[in-house]
Every structure is written in structure tokens, then in C-alpha cells.
Image 1 (cartoon, rainbow, N blue to C red):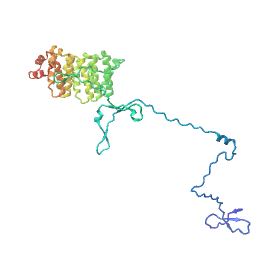
Image 2: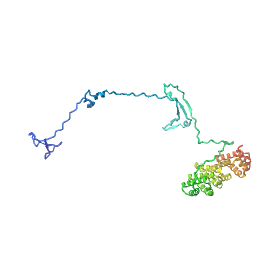
Image 3: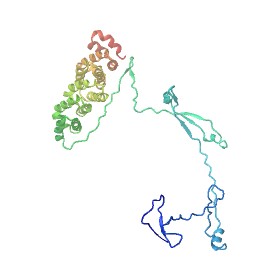
Image 4: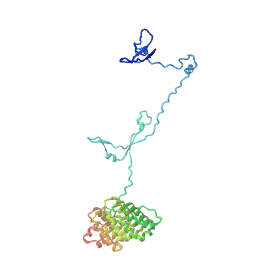
Length: 411
């Protein structure tokens, strides 16, 4: 059938209408024909279930003959299964110790933060030995009773043995030990390095000052012949840097003075008084970093330089100082000087040394600071071991203080 659009489409709601051009006598050109809907699919048979039926899977040989060779081969092939072997039993090991070192945690009322029992933590470690066989009831090995072993505490290596007390007053005398210094490498051109070091010490940058101090230490250790002609200028420059406000520069200068005392020894006698006064004044600072360096430099000065110059420098710089820390450093240096010189040499040698040393120690023995008194009385105990001690006290100490000083002498 042929369909054509009409010239004037009628106003009809819904699908568009088309004229039917047919020679059927029952239809005319004016009749309208609506296209028929497509035929519907046949409804599936309802088997009464909730879900539609599922088609079964058919084997590949469903269309083949039953006596086919493929089916016989597939069905006659047997499947072999290997059973899993049973797990092997764990071997029974020997008894092992179990270390128990876990502090008990307690909760304070009103807080969920655990608090550790510090007292239990400080107790020695207890090793509880429990045999593993106790956990198995069918064990053949007999159970051994639990043993408690206390582990031996290791002594810390950074704690030195306490020195023994000398005399009745339990005064402590420290052993005389030579302080250790770091070693520097030798220089290729020491003459040029000396001028470079003096120039770097005049610079304002602290890094350059530190490098200049390192060059001075290397020159004093390996090239003393270059340093001696300019020793006064070098010592003055280094002593000036001891008073530097930057701690790293000040500590470097103090260490450099220790190197100068150690390697040049008696050649530094002319600089001892100024150096001792500066170092003792620096000992009064609160920084432990600086005070340790000052103690190192004073020890090397006492061990290396002339005793008379050292004594004069200590008396001028620290015996009348207002700071008790400086006076304590002076008293300690006097004790070390007495150990270096020797008691018999002080009492029976030149009168100049004894006439300055004994009155100074007697004055410091009644100082208001306890540390000063401790070191001064240690020196008196060392002097009291000699038979000439009382005679020297009667000769060099004032009359009003002689009785008290004699009581402090070690008999």
C-alpha cells in the first residue's frame, strides 16, 4: 500500500494521521487510516513461582550420539586426589628464662593518664625463669620450680672514684692529673700562618677569630721557634679574646692559653700574671662551658710554668676577689701548686715562697664560702704532715690565728 501526506492535515490529537490510497470501494480518499501497532510478543507461561524459570545448562555432547568416543573418553578418565599430610608436632625445647622488667601503671583518681611507679623501676631487674613444659599437661619432662635471679647492676663508667679524705676534718684532696689537650696538624708555611693568625684575631667576624686561634694552637704545638719572637703580641691578642662576649670565641681563647702553657712552658713566665688574673676573673661566670675551660688552663699553668710566677699571679688575681667562685678556683690552684712543688720544698726551701704561700692559705681557710675553706684546709693538711709545719706557722702566720691553724694541721 502507498501512503501520502494530505495537503491539509486535520487537527487531530495524538499520532499523525495519514490518508490511505487504495482502490477498495469501502474506502474513499477522504477516509483516514491510523497505523496499527506492532504485534505483541507471546506471554511467558507462569509456572506459579516468584521468578521466571532458568534455562538449564546443556553439555557440549548433548547433540552428539551417546556412543561417541569423546563422551566415553571424558567419563572414563579418573580424577586423582592426594590427601593433605597432617601437621608435624612442634619440637620440645629446653627451658628459657623470661625477663620481667615492666613497671606497674597506676591511674590517679579523676584522670585517665597512666602513672608509672618510679620506685619499682629503680629496683634491680628480676628474671623469672618458668619452664615451658608446664604449659603442656601431657609433657614427659618433669616441671622444675620457678627460680628468681637478680641481675647484677653495671657500674656507670662516667663516675670517677671518690678521693680519700685526709686528716681529721674529712678534707678532700684531689689527685694531681695532667689535663688532656687536642692535637693540631702541623702547618706547611708557619711564617705566613703567623701573620695570617694575627690578622684574623683582629677581624670582627667570630668565625675568622676562631680560625686564627686554631692557627695559634698549631704554631705553639709544632712551630715554637716561630712563635717565641712574637710571643708577647700573640699572648696579648689571645688574652684579649678570652674576654670576648661570644662564648665560643672565649672558650677557644682559653683553650689556646692552655696550649701555650703546655708547649712553651717556662717561656710563658712573663705572661703568667696577666693570664692568671684574666682566667680567674673568667672563672666567676655561670656558664659551665667556660668554667671547665678555665680550670683546664689554670691546671696547665700550674704544671708548666715557674712556681714563683704562678703563685704571684694567683695571689694578685684571686685571693681578694669578691666572687667566691673565683676565690675557690684560687684555693684549688694553690693546692695543686703545693702538690707540684712538694711540701718539703715549700717549708725548707726559699723563704720567699713560704712567706707568701702559708699566709694566703691560712687566710682562705677561714673564708665565708665553704668551697674556699675546703680547698685551703686541704693544703694545710698536706703541710701538717711535715715536721716543720708548726714552726712555719709560728713564723709566717699572725699570732691571733696560730692556734686555729695548728688545729687544722694533720698530725
